[in-house]
Length: 162
Image (tube, rainbow, N blue to C red; front, side):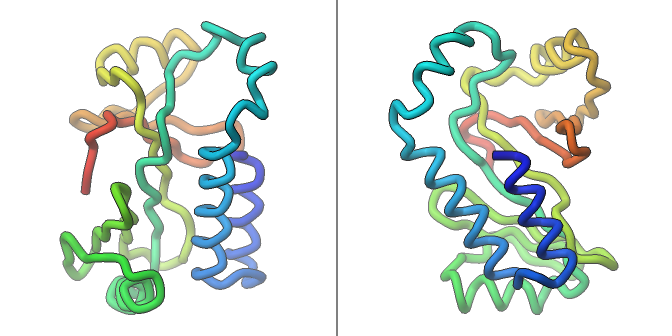
């Protein structure tokens, strides 16, 4: 899944996808994974207990954008998102029980994506990630680390919100 998201982001950065298409592709991929049922059960059964965390869903996606207001207006108008916090340099919008964060930057790209984690404890997560050889960055009750392709992953509790 991460390889597909990375390809979507690269296509977006190269102008092959619009922002709307990027969000639709990522949302579709997340929905497919969430509704996959037992399709991957044999793989999951063979790796029982092997994962450091139990992700329960994609919590949010954070994007860097050159014009926060323009991007905000796009997501509100075309995807019906609701603005929960808005400013010159950032905007947080809800979509269902999840959210999208926009951060002002020179270049449009993914900032990070966040997974909700079952029984999340930031101190425990930091220990586990360090034991796996990562150098995680901890900010409050959030923790960040790179995936194999260098995309920034954030882990948070199920109830983490904007």
